[in-house]
Amino acid sequence: MKRIAQTKKRLTLTTPDLVLLSLLAERPMHGYQAKAELERREIRDWAGISRPQVYYSLEKLARIGMIRSLETDEPASGPERSSFETTAKGRAALADALEREDWTTQRDRPPFLTWVALSWQARPGVFQEQIRRRQKFLEREVARERETLRSILEEVGHPYHEAAWMVSLMIEQFKTELRWLKRVAREMRKRGRAKHPDYAAPERG
Image 1 (cartoon, rainbow, N blue to C red):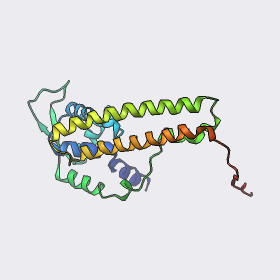
Image 2: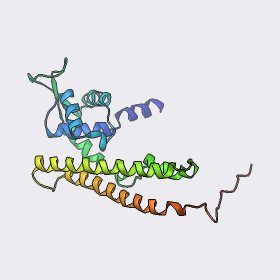
Image 3: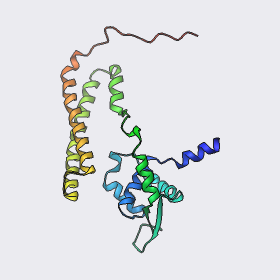
Image 4: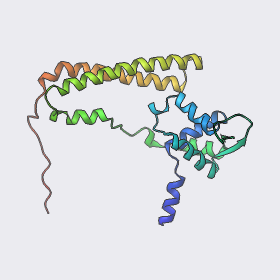
């Protein structure tokens, strides 16, 4: 049973696997090209994928028949000479994965939210400074994502594309948090302890 569980875990498609299946469904690429294209698309803004994961996923997907190697004369970095494309099996697996309910029913746990929960223990003045830092960061991100959206619209030629929708959502989320931060900045002097705390009762042994 343990061996079966380990085998199943190895065959489970991770986020890097799914991203690469989608990318290689667009056109064949070798590993260096895939990595460069993911960086151009600012992959770390929307999926956690490192360079080693790209190459690990390529090897894994090829081993289980979800991508296939194509020999090419196209120059590549180092010894890479094989391009990969998504197979019919890989496309079906990707489509199956995109039907999972958990894509739509999970909540993020951003570090800043954790900081807000713990912030009552901060030293005097730190709360105000951190709120200011967060505002500055979000303002930079809004400007950066607006430039990204402009580039996407130039490349795609219309706003009805998943990349445009994704970046516009990120912009709206940042803008919403900026409005919230302004409200908190106005209200922070009213910060107070809970008036009616209801602590969990100790467990009985």
